[in-house]
Amino acid sequence: MKGILIACGIILLWLAHLLYSLFMLPAPSTATISSPVQAAWMLFHILLQTWLFTGLFITAHDAMHGTVAPGRAKVNYLTGMTATFLFAALSYRKLLEKHHLHHKHPGTELDPDYYTGAQNFWVWWYSFMRQYLTLWQFLIMAVLFNLLNIWFATSALILYWILPSILSTLQLFYFGTYLPHRLPHTEAMTEHHARTQKKNHLWALISCYFFGYHLEHHLWPGTPWWHLYTKKTA
Image 1 (spheres, one colour):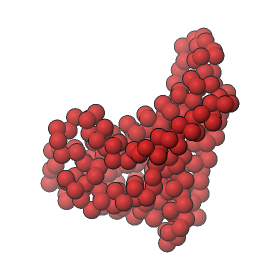
Image 2 (cartoon, one colour):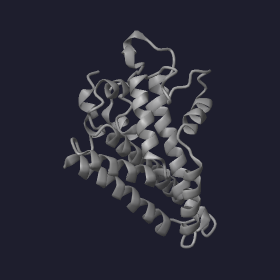
Image 3 (spheres, one colour):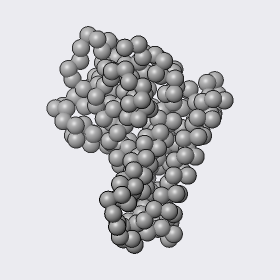
Image 4 (cartoon, helix red, strand yellow):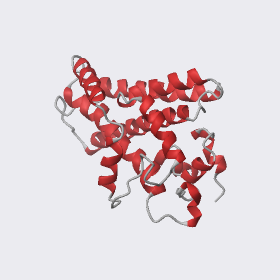
């Protein structure tokens, strides 16, 4: 039950903070930012919502590995579908298929998350995102945006919902793909072509829910994110 409770907790925190931001925080079009303190407060909530968006995807990722509810495939699938839909109407089925290919062929031309060309951050990020974006996703997000726009200002939706989701893709890509798998590939990265960040559990949690410990994840893919730090030795 622990994995289920943690997954539900992240989803509920994401929803609660999004509603708080939309209802309680000022929208730039309807309120003047009167002080640096107010601007910093808004920025804090944008970054917090970004981190919670990242938590949604990490929850879906755990579901892909069956670690939300070990031995309960339907619960994992439902959790993954819920988290990816809330993240940005992503196709969980497509994510599941491509993620297992990533683990099977990490850091090679057969890895859908890997970019074999010049490994410029932005070019690779664009290539990475193209793997998962679909026309149906944009249509669903457009419908949701227009529905929410009935009750919330456009600027608030962009600032507290759309922007954090985009920033979250950068966070996930940077800490979960670019840093761990970029060239040069060394012997220490083993056949997983994955490196790991230095041991610092607080930073690992804040930066990407311990997925900076990326080699450890590839070595023990059945370890849930909230237990991954225990695999870190140095």
